Image 1: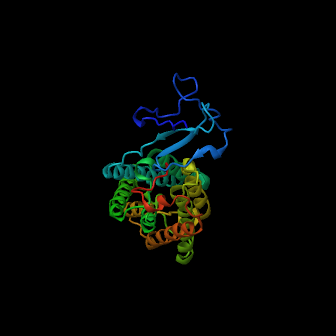
Image 2: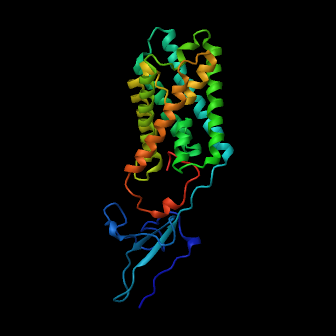
Image 3: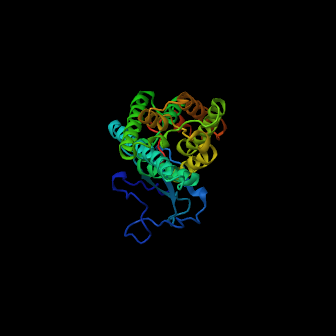
Length: 310
């Protein structure tokens, strides 16, 4: 009986060699048209993928050769870099969303509601694409708290993330105040309806946002590569729904910095409570309805940072 071929892991290529490689085994039918049943689940760990290799048997009853490729997980990102990336991302978001609102006021509505929604949605999308693989691109204390509550993010890092988000909000707001003073008031999110309606709207749109964020950031079956588009589009939709009525904050620090810079605190408690409660409910509901994990090991190893780039 022919023995199974065993390859030295240190000499194996990082990608499957082609049939034309000298001395390489013949990967017969290794392509998209190959039946999925020939792919074997690794018993060596999550980072090792083993494939059956078709060979010409020298004698009847010989076993097929098996080759494995081992992919190492990426190195952990230092906490300092995460916090810096979170600060920069939040600064860009608050600056873009608030500046567009101020310019809209200064130009008597030339930006329009669609322009306001598009500006903030695009800012969210590009920040997720740029920093999602570093810090997770939370940009919002509500998202950070909701992730931590569901054990997708360590509580020990929550204070640092929220501090970075708050500082970024203040920096962006006072930069805009210096540029656009005395019309800073255009960037403040204040309710134009009664407080009950404003609370309900902020709760619902924050629920919508966190439901989508939880899907693309925590479910391995969601299309993580499109997370920026999905979350940005959700932000745009929410602004179109509630923008003229509450400012569609969805984010306590979106309200905090401009409120302090403009000294306008009307209904500020709504923007500190409704987004957090809505985000907690949105994350909890998605966690309850999503399909069970196929890989139980994934549930036993909580990730240090929930990232949009998987």
